[in-house]
Image (tube, rainbow, N blue to C red; front, side):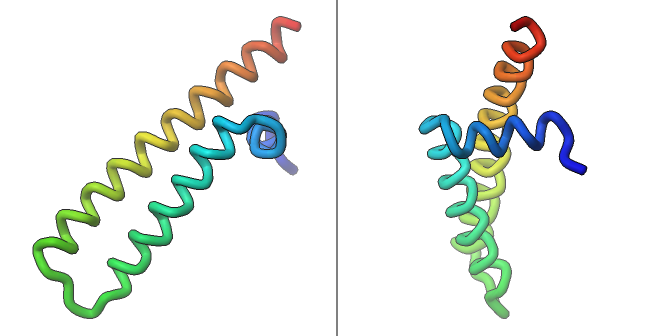
Length: 78
């Protein structure tokens, strides 16, 4: 059963352009990271890119969760 936060995420994905943009960028980072991790041999550039992508994913997730939190706050107070 989806939690309230899950329902809010689904709603934001459908209705909030900013949230959707963050989610799409998060997915792009995930796909790029997967490509790097699937490489049998990684050079120092790949390792650096892996670190950058992981940090970017965390930043995007934090921004997305901030929007969920704001929306939860609005739902509770309205």
